[in-house]
Structures are given as C-alpha cells and as structure tokens.
Amino acid sequence: MELFEAIILGLIQGLTEFLPVSSSGHLVLFQSIFGLHEATQSFNILLHMSTLIAVFIYYRKDIWDLMCHPFQRTTALLIAGTIPTVILALLFNDTLNSIFGAGKFLGFNFIFTGCVLLFADSRKNGKKKIRNMSIFDALIVGTMQGIAITPAISRSGMTISGCLARGMNRENAARFSFLLSIPAILGAMVLTVKDMLSGEVSLGETFGVLPIAIGCIAAAVSGYLAIRFMVSVIKNGKLKWFSVYVFLLGAVLLLDQFVLHVIIPA
Image (tube, rainbow, N blue to C red; front, side):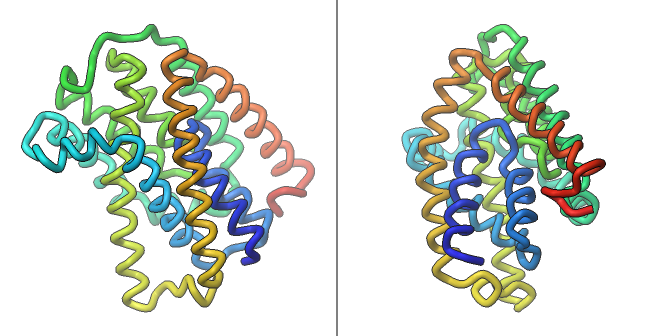
C-alpha cells in the first residue's frame, strides 16, 4: 500500500464513520479501486480504532462521567445496545464478509442506507433524552447497529435512525449513536489483536508500518471534524442530503456492476 493510498483510506474512514454514508462500504470500494485485498479487514478495524480517538475527545465529558460513575443508567443502556450487535457479529460476521466483502452488493446496500436516512429525516424531533430511554429502546438501536456490520450499510445512519424512531431528540440521538460505537469498535479491535498475536494477520508486512500509522492519524483527525459537522447536521434535520448522495453512489455502482465493469471488476 502506497502512502497516498493510506492517507486517502484514512480520510475516507474518518469522514464516513460519522457521516451516515457507511465507512465500511467506502473502504471496500476504494480498496477495490486500489487493488488491495490482503488483510484489509484488519486494517479497516485499525482505522475504525483511530476514529475512536475523535469520539473520546469530542465526548470526553460524557466518557469521564461514565468512568467516574460506571453504575448509572447510561452504562446499562450502552451495554443493552451492545448485546444485539455482539450477537449478530458473532453469528453472521464471517458469512456477511464472505458474501458482501467483494463489493457485489455495495450498490444495493448504499440504496438501502439511503432509504433508512429518508425515513429518519421524516421523523419529527422527539423529546426523549438518553436518560429517558428504555432498555427496549437500546436493544432496538443495538440491533440496528448489528445490521450495519454489512458493508455499505451505515452504522451511524442505522443507529441515529433507530434513536429517532424511538422518539429521541436529534442531539441525544447523535450522542447515543457515537457513544455506542465505542464498545462495538473496541470489541472488533480485540479480535484483530488476537489474530495479530496468533500470526494470522501481518499488517506490517502487507501494508507497511508507515502507511498504516499515517492512515490512522488521518482517520483520527478527519473523524473529529466529521463528528462536529454531523452533530450540527443532525440538529438541523438535513439527513436527506446524505440519502441523495448514497442513492446516486448506489446507482453508479449498480450501473458499473451490471454494465460498465470499471470500478469493481466483474
């Protein structure tokens, strides 16, 4: 992997992790364009881990409060929201990666994300804050997050939409969505570290240490900027513009898949 490619992938991951357009779908797309196929899933998880730095910085007060007072309702809600994600990931992650990882369904999944965003944008601003959420609300949002293990289905789009569907106000929907990403990404990181220690993954040999480091830095910086931008967008209810983007991208990919065969080889 060239340094330029690592920077591009890092920027893509950081921006699209918190914009509701699917970071995994964009990474699969650009890795296909760059011709990268080996150990890409582990590299993607490292990039996801880098974007957690952005979450820690932006929501540092919330995270510090959770650390100082771990036995509170928000902790219980985050645990409840994580359970469905873990179950779906353990049961279906390998299967979904084998089916969707090559990019054959990216177009369809981007369009599905667009439909979800249109639904979310149509919801009125609710009144619920995180402290008013029920355990059932958290389970629903966690299930939505679990569905997003499929490339091109946006994690943030699914969780924010789930929160809005359960009557949360937009600012708290964003907060819960981004806080819920922490245990999900950390769990995926643990599995990657296990594979690295067992010798099943050798990212340094595959991609090079410097490109990996630069890519991760790019992901962290762009991720922080994306969070600030996305929180403002959610408050003002403009998710429909992201749906237009993923609809167009999905249509282009479907045209390429069935007719042109330029972006993703047949």
